[in-house]
Amino acid sequence: AQKVTQAQTEISVVEKEDVTLDCVYETRDTTYYLFWYKQPPSGELVFLIRRNSFDEQNEISGRYSWNFQKSTSSFNFTITASQVVDSAVYFCALSETNYGQNFVFGPGTRLSVLP
Amino acid sequence: EAQVTQNPRYLITVTGKKLTVTCSQNMNHEYMSWYRQDPGLGLRQIYYSMNVEVTDKGDVPEGYKVSRKEKRNFPLILESPSPNQTSLYFCASTPGRGYPYEQYFGPGTRLTVT
Image (tube, rainbow over all chains, first blue to last red; front, top):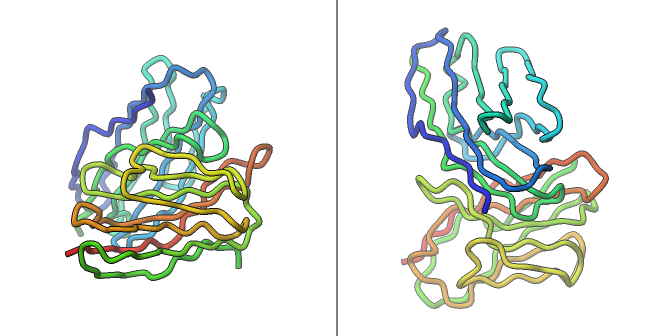
């Protein structure tokens, strides 16, 4: 069965520090999709990125970057020069289909960025 | 505006009193899902639907029912709520096969069962 582990329950950093959120996944499928979502204190889920299993290119979007390594089944998320507005719960998720079935979330990592 | 809406956003009820949480999407998406979010567990899928009249169980379906009579609506029904169903609930929709894969989430419904 598929599984997503986010070993860091809570992380606190001071503004402008870099922080990496870890995500390790398990799946038997060769085709799968990985996601990161942000949940700010207001509660909504904000989509950050989707990565297909056959695309191992790392991605950078502004201060955000993602490191996908199939060899270690990891999909880590780095925030560079963190800001207070980055404070949120971050979820990594895995799907073995491309339509929402069997969409599995990790337990989340609560990031607190202190001024 | 493309969106998923849920109602109510907040609900406090008592054990055993039937309730329905509505979910509607205006994007003509084929797939819809319900999730519950609990501390330390992330989001877990309750039910999903691949199209009208086609639904299937997710990881935690016990105590819940769903229906998909129209493509845009996917209500979640708790026929006899219990305190362990106190949670934050999210509805989501997905375009379907062949489209860029993204789940669009509703704003969430916070349910408290006393």
